[in-house]
Image (tube, rainbow, N blue to C red; front, top):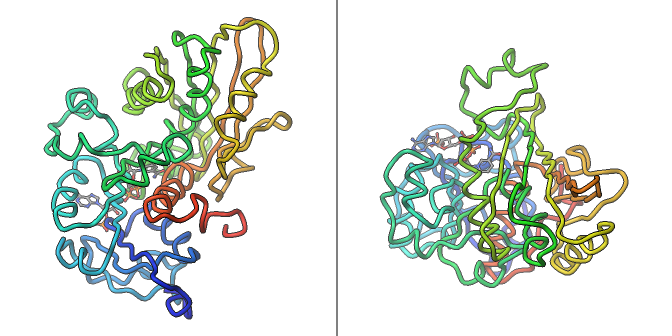
Length: 352
Ligand SMILES: NC(=O)c1ccc[n+]([C@@H]2O[C@H](COP(=O)([O-])OP(=O)(O)OC[C@H]3O[C@@H](n4cnc5c(N)ncnc54)[C@H](OP(=O)(O)O)[C@@H]3O)[C@@H](O)[C@H]2O)c1
């Protein structure tokens, strides 16, 4: 905890992080240490003997909490809200005891994003063991469903790629400005999207100077996009999603090809975006220069632009996968659940 931080807070929200040694945990810690109303009360990991500043040397002198093992009753005694930063399939084993102990949960994994357990099981290839809580989980896109998030006990924080596609597409589908068929989403992501655990595929010599597509037709974020666009746009959509790995640490750029239902320039699309996101603190609409991962690096912004190209419109969106694509959006959800302003503690001045 930052020296003097605790004393300055009145009725702070006490939060715990489970899976404390991972990338999304580190990003949460960076922002929460500056949050005016959040108190980091507990860090939970399978490596309880190790200080967090040994796992993340940048935290030396900034947070001295001991790491503790997973004990739901102890967590409920010390925290009001938990960020679950563990892999899918693991998260669904932690959620039931946490909710039963009375703690609210923001799950950063995919376990509670897909409402249909059968769809989840076919894409993630294992059984869903917590269908009861799945029914009540709220998909945590604060720019599109703030009221539901505010009342939720369990929030499924959206995936990074889906956030980059759903936010630009949903208002256009809802307004009937684009057809629901033949939506093509080409996305490139930095390597931190794969988490901190090393693998041969993500080893530096494999990724450096390499730019390639992967999981064509098989990426698990495709059904998440389709589900959210049907829910927020009001119509079933047909999406082709092609993810790419880009040799950079962080950031996502999505290029999205759609077919407009209206003739002429993109003015009506821009109007729909402005109407949907006029009150959203982190949605920025650009024209020139076009969105770039550079302009959103280490921030909670998503930048989006739209251009007319023959019979199509081409949308580009950019976000930082670790912030708007994970920890930042999770803190927006935390703010809404606690009754704080959506953007509290996330303004650009708070960046590293
Ligand atoms: N990276 C991104 O850009 C991103 C974006 C959106 C969503 N997400 C999602 O957020 C979650 C965390 O991602 P991350 O990038 O932080 O991953 P990560 O860097 O790999 O960290 C995950 C942490 O989970 C814990 N863990 C791993 N396997 C476990 C198991 N079998 N049982 C219990 N705990 C286990 C480990 O923490 P301990 O060793 O401390 O227990 C590990 O450090 C994932 O579900 C991921 O899909 C990630």
